[in-house]
Image 1 (cartoon, rainbow, N blue to C red):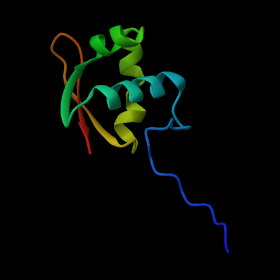
Image 2: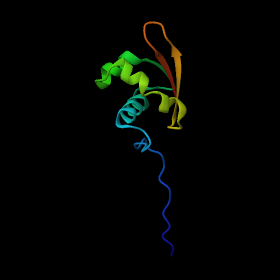
Image 3: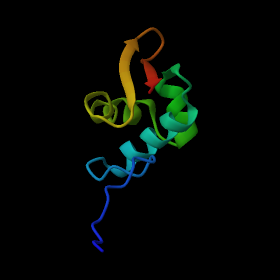
Length: 87
């Protein structure tokens, strides 16, 4: 009988290529987003104890990466808005 390891399914585990702040933001977005949700950087920041600037500067890897959600920069009026879609 062979005991080959099977790849683990993606269960929202941390992504090693992301910094701890990026992982916190990703975890928050995964938990808070429905099928399509809009978030302001300042509101994410308030929930996570960061500044809006910290959130904005840490979003690029989430926009560019494959993390089980789609993140797009959506608007700029009174702060940056992010559209987050789940699969």
